Image 1 (tube, helix red, strand yellow):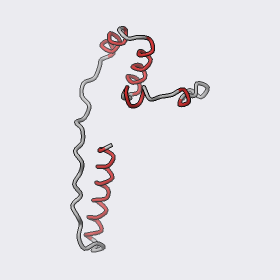
Image 2 (image 1 turned 90 degrees about the horizontal axis):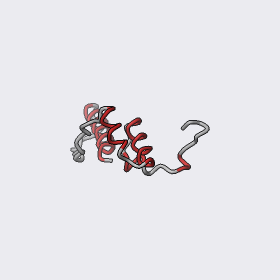
Image 3 (image 1 turned 45 degrees about the vertical axis):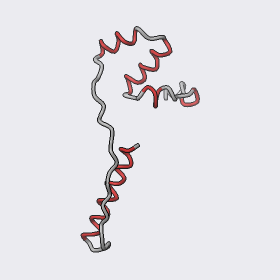
Image 4 (image 1 turned 60 degrees about the horizontal axis):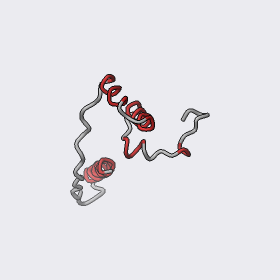
Length: 92
């Protein structure tokens, strides 16, 4: 979430600086950004993923397949999916 807030603050800062240059505002206030988490690191190669996947129950295999294929987070994006989010006819 901090990432999105920082992007908005960055845009707001740009707008205020432009307005300051055009003398539309008297003072451009400082807009401190929030501390962001470090970028993700470390990726499974296909053979490493397959080795880990084989050790899981079938229901967990499906979850990690989705996460691996689409780059989703297991806890936040995959395990929160519900049947109503899936349309098998449309393939979505």
